[in-house]
Amino acid sequence: MGEIYRLAKRVLIYIGFEDHDHDPQVCSLLDDVNRMIEDTCKQIDMSWDSFPYPENNDPLLLDSRWRSFICVSQRDWFKRGWVVREAAFTQYGLIIWHQSEFSWAKLTRSFMWLSQRSDSTFIGAILPKVSFVCHSEASKNRDTDFAQTLSEEDIWQPQSLLEDMNWAKSLELSDSRGRIHAFMDLSENSERVAPIRPDYNLAPLEVYRLLAIHFVRADHTTHILDYVVHGLDFEDLKIPSWIPRWNLPEWSISTTTLHSSLLLSSRNGYYAEPTIMNYEALSLKGIVIDSVELISDAFNFDSTTLETARELWKTIGHMFEVSPYGPSHILEAFSDAVCQGVCSGAWMNWWRSRAAFMADVQVEHKELVSSQVPYQKHTLSKCGSVMTLLFDRASHTLDGKPFIVTKRGYMGLTPRII
Image 1 (spheres, rainbow, N blue to C red):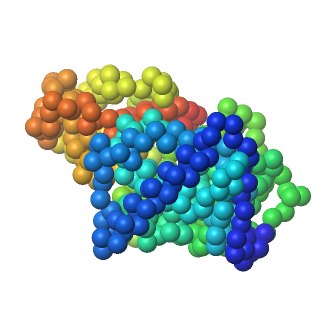
Image 2: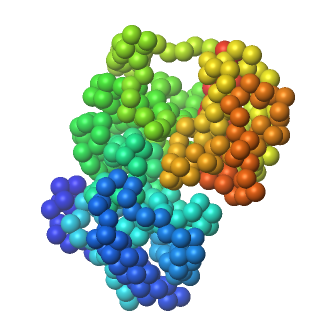
Image 3: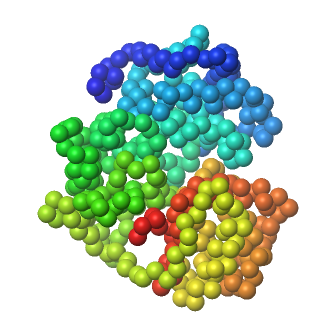
């Protein structure tokens, strides 16, 4: 089916009726946003991160028609799993909504600009559901010239089979085996993993096991471990614990960082490739083994605030007499741990947000940070708004996960069951 959609010159996408006149509002908004994008692209050199940021009072950012954009992104069509590749492969996609129509490319370009160039407060208020983000990520890798003008080169992530399947956990598929088969040929993924042939005679967990083995043997890395998550029924399942469960609607603790393409190696540069034993056991070398000294309660998205992080630091700050991060950078490691080491938005804005958070902790708990690099110069009058960028990220990464500190001072997030 993937090859059929690749050959299609035009794909019509019908997303239903509309009773509140949102469809013409979306059409005019997409025309205005894409006109701005085209005009701007003519004035820049199209290099990495060269697309300018709008002013906070830019009329397009404050336009009320974004409410109509939210409505289109919440249509049931966007919740379906198999349509992601159907839209992504098309040479030209035309969306038909009630009495209006607009191009698929205009829709995805507008979302890319909005998500990469608006401030965090605004994007948090109107960002569509994750189901729409799946489409945006697939389209980004087919409109790379434009997408790269919105991204720094260091944090650009090529399309990944594992990331595609992880995003797709929010999508609806009638058969959980489709969570593999619907995305295997979505692109020439960065892991260079060839598609596996669909076999619906196999149980879903067996399909997940075969994919995991196939992936490790093709990619020669342990990246698949970044996506392991298990539910409360794990003890009753006959499946190795290192195999991701793609049918669980929970996001894994991914290690998407600024240097995610680098493989962890020993001090002398040696890298031991993982191997599969007896068709199910994963054999690894170089794993850090340590005992857990502290594990917090699982955090909740709705109740995670700056005060939550302050209290967490108050609980763990005295535990780092010996630390693998060095005596002067424990706060940096703590702030990176609560955000999984992921940078959101422009790097400089993220760095300021991170520094403001560490300054706040230093002021609040002087007795616990006396040896740390001083960040007090970042306690500006607008410190709270600066920290919003970091906590928008942290509230998502902490959701449903406990924070742990090990005996040797390592810290991080863990699934509910360890």
